Length: 390
Ligand code: EPS
Image 1 (cartoon, protein in one colour):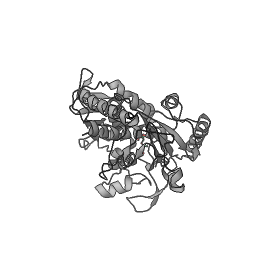
Image 2 (tube, protein in one colour):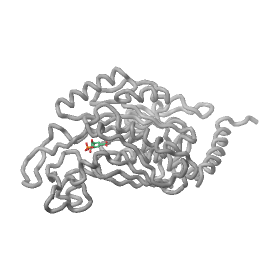
Image 3 (cartoon, helix red, strand yellow):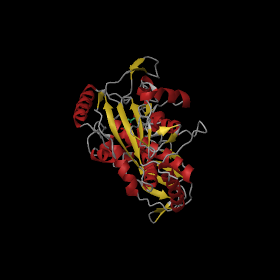
């Protein structure tokens, strides 16, 4: 069973992830994790914090001499901004004479966790809410997701993502393959359509000038999955539900669709499904690689809609919690657009769900044991695909 816990405040000392589940014998280095941390930091439209941070992971436990031990893997991602916040975020009460708790935040941002979080936890300083609800916490998810990526790579499973739309500007459809995704890795928005990408970047610049923010749509793609991960036999085991829950849990994500998703509602059944061809392959992948809550052997395609970030430099109307009077929301340092970063976070979430489903199917306390079970299943699938005629 794979299980993840994370902790950490945006301007605290560090973010922490504890991951249980990876089998013993998997090769893993901090470099494997840092690659994804770097990818999460990039993307056109990111704010000044990203220029300050150079996220790097320290492996605290669960790995010895470059191989996992089968014990929980603890990961630490230090916040380089911490020295600037030591007093404001100190775990100990401030000295009375030097009481500089920082100015309490009292004007909640519409769209952020500020108001509901303050009411729920009875926090009078909204900083107590925003520090944990900040998207900074996603760095810990990405660190853990990189371990899942390493595990699944052992079985030929790879995952990437690309930006489909920003601020209503949509990329033209382009072939999505491991090669096209790799080629777009260094593009400003990791978009497969360079012309649309240029227009998106301009829109981000214009939004920045207006003190506004932009959301968008991204797609996560997973190649090399065997059929039969997940299950139809219980509702909670259905992989589409688990994947959607994991991606919806990412800050600012407001919608998730699998394959052709919402568009399937508008076409007849004859145009909605993917006919099964000899060899058990499909010519189309409208289902996005999931049928009956299970992988079907086709690439997994999952799209998500991200709303614009709730911190606006030209803030929205709110209420001052001290006076109850109309006010404008607090302004904090933030991003103008973080759609490519959210896509990297979604990759991590998807990889963690898939690693858990993979481990549930194949088991294994050691990687070698998992490999044997996977190999035997692949042999069986091959026989289904090419039955020997009698
Ligand atoms: C982020 C860190 C945060 C924000 C941003 C993402 O750092 P800071 O608040 O110090 O600038 O830049 O957070 C949000 C968009 C948000 O809504 O909280 C990060 O590491 O991704």
